[in-house]
Length: 562
Image (cartoon, rainbow, N blue to C red; front, side, top):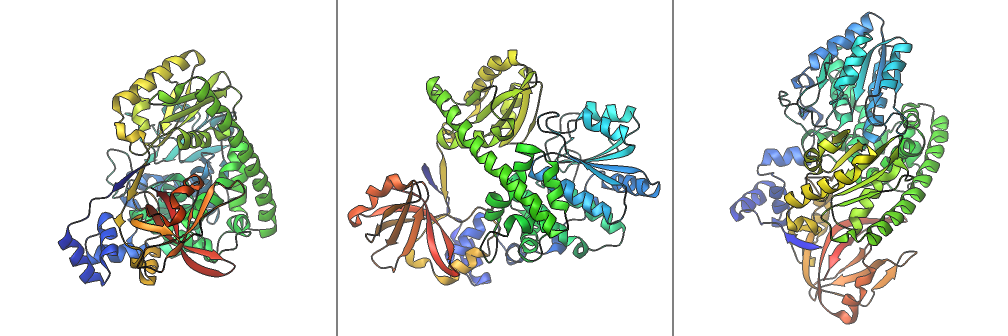
């Protein structure tokens, strides 16, 4: 890893923020790095409020969407809530359908089959709507590029409302309403919502129309927080507010499905990290291994015993998913090795029997080993389907646009995308993608960067600092867990390898003038020699609370040392 120390903010600004907030220089520095310069901005950051959410009617077409839904209710039409099979899509479907069912009974849900129908709105889904008398489809987390599908539905007298957050193409589908804050002609103040977030703005608008307050909708925020965490959208603005209050719901009064997924976790309060690594993969596993419907059933079930049954089935899907992704990652790494592809600027691999449900995870795993923009292909029907993942700072969506002549379809955003192509175009695409990456990637993007917020001494880690760092949560893109660097530290002689396969490192680090802290470095066991004989080293780490048997203590989570 290359360590990059962030530029220190202007010293006068640091001093001003220290004085108005009564905090030390470290906290003032961290706030300024996050664009927080005034007392008012700091208050909004540390004390999120649902009152600071934007008026949903500021979103282009929101009035049309509400009018069409109210008209469907008044005319007793059947409404189909349609969504993608990942966490963002299934939580969005659970949210919008369960809200609509509180005011109207003729609501059903539809999640496309990942293998049979693929990503997004499907002709099969539209035929299902037509066969079963649905005249309105609300599409969530998909649809922004489904021009042909929406036209096909229109021929069958089925209207569409699209709620998406992916980048639109040059032409929008001819839907009754297209809710997407990334539309060029949409002046909504915040354009980083996830799909479930756009779904929440829709029910917020419906609620406002029905004289409901934001407090009446707060119980849905556990779903929104889960989607925000899983979709890795920026943890700023509205996302931060929604995630903050969503975590409160998860920790106080979660829906039975989420409670069933988390009941084994012995923690006082779940963090956004727990949502990312515990809740989200399990919800995702349903669509990856079996069918996304299982996730929607879990998230809309109000009987806890039944929810537990659904959760145990999903637990099994998740175990199967882990086995598959480990096996496929091994095969993909072997393929890279055997083909001598380590020297390329991109990684593109293919095997026809790889499980389509885990290729996105495998792409992320490959980046951990070969830090390159990565695409993993498998066979899907008579086509090849793939998932792409990118490295920090590189826009993989733009690279795909440059090769789009070889693709059947593609969609996504800067760091993740999906695509299909004809088998005969695979090699042409692979060569074109390598050229697109080579021509546009900066050399430093090919080495993983470790961004350091500030260089500090260990004795600056006080209980007050630890307390304030907790208030920076929830963490996510653009509000990452603060990362510190300290030089001239040494291990007191406690260093040892830990974990079942002894790949992790356990230390007790000190500086000459400090009391020191326990520290753990995941995956850093091979650096144990650097810490022997009380030799000084420098380290990059996060400060965190470690909860064990009811006791809470401060420990350092080491990210690297040298």
